[in-house]
Image (tube, one colour):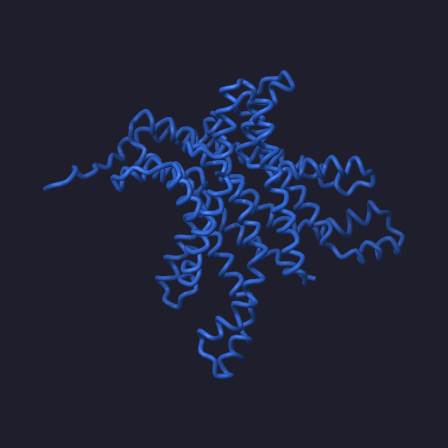
Length: 198
Length: 225
């Protein structure tokens, strides 16, 4: 459940983050300001507050109750989308302006410049921070146990209470998280060395 | 008019409970400061141990930083609160458990920041200092640290902001900070929408200026080689 929730939220967040990043770079002031506000709201409040708000407060507003799974995945996705939008934006802006101008002066359309010149280079620069973001999200997914979504941490806490063996169960849960996170960390380190070695 | 009745906002409920929320805010701020202080000290010790000549010392420091960086903070907080007392026989209050868990969590991240800062200074400068007859201690104090400090400050500030938000997790073990107060009041008054919205706004208003400060520090201390 922990793995599935993280992957689902990441996929959704990656899709939402892209238009946000593009809107953030818009020439129209109000559009870029609104996208900036979206990013800042999600980045300036704790994920736990967001989860609780979506699970307990939002249903009152929309008059529709939510399952813990839906609330958890949606909140994590929007949360991570704000961070991903900034990663996309930094990646795109990191490509030297001269290359854009060179492409345009060769007669490419702005869209062609974006697809053929900027994005292929930007993507490799985005990969390492996206990997780090995935690891953070994976660890943060433990928080959805607090809105009773039955992932690893929730199972561990209920088992610990049921068996009265918190020492063994909670330690095992910590070790499982460690075993799952370590290979991801090794991979992200590799990405950093491979794509960000200057 | 058909359909269910319109929702009536009751912000007076929030106003009535404002003193409780504000006491939560002050504990959130105090926790952030104390955890950061603990993290700075623990992190420095761990960073120095990781650069040690003895393999065992290096190994222990490495195990510490990796254990805290590869597990969720919530797991650490719950572990320190429920498991550590069984192991040590010493019962800590929720406040101290939270302080220890979060402080050591920050310490692990700080250790990596210190280490990266020290290693980022060109090794040629160490060689040059030694060649000029300085002792290793002098090289560290006069050449490396002054340069490392400016590189360490911006990521340190980022850690501070993350820590400020992470203190909300301590509500899970009953530390009466802002988030715990919010859940308490929301349950007592049956007004989760108003309470949680206001609390989210409070977190935003407190965190956003800090993020601006961090951005400033990044611009101010951009690495000059």
